[in-house]
Length: 283
Image (cartoon, rainbow, N blue to C red; front, top):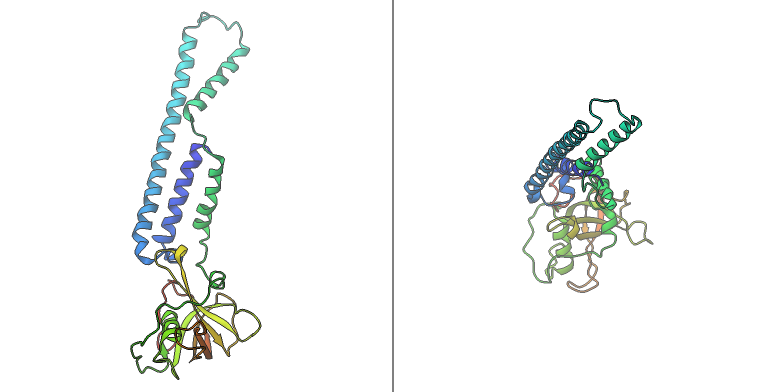
């Protein structure tokens, strides 16, 4: 890879990072909100390094041309045929060609890198022109339903009806709450649709992905939904329903499950990894 293209890669990568972090909230598809300042600083640094490298490349190229032509003029001035016609004029073009080669060599010495470096252009251009979506049903369908806490008694729930809960809190109470605080309570949950295991057409999962730092460490929380027709995978919905007991608290048979009475399609939240409870009206 020529150095001029390495410079372009720095500029592209920096512009892409700034596009998703400084000029939009697309970065929330990949990392937590607290990392935004670091992304902005990284993007700005890449652009700055690219500009500095571009200026140095331009100066080096100009200097190489100047030195090459000075050398060519020096040789011509000391030629034993100075002041006379060239004995071998056809070689003038040849010498000029060598001068151009010298310019190229001096301006681009050691400018070639590993050819595999060209592959780095692909993610930079994709991120700049088309930001990949957040993780979704593909990831959720490959993980078992997870709960976040051990068995025991949970704090009492508010009297709100229906009761908005996060998918993570509902999962923990459904699997580990020995006091059965979810019994006969109508709840509201928000998440995206992920396919069921097959067999029962009325069974699918309401899923959420929660990150500790970035999408690479995402944890899956999902609730098995019964009694409602599934929408397309990755569709964001708010589900109204009642907890379906599946086993003794803390046992392997206990899984988060819900008998749905209503499913409403919603827009994908700006931060898809923030497992926030829906508003009381389901929005």
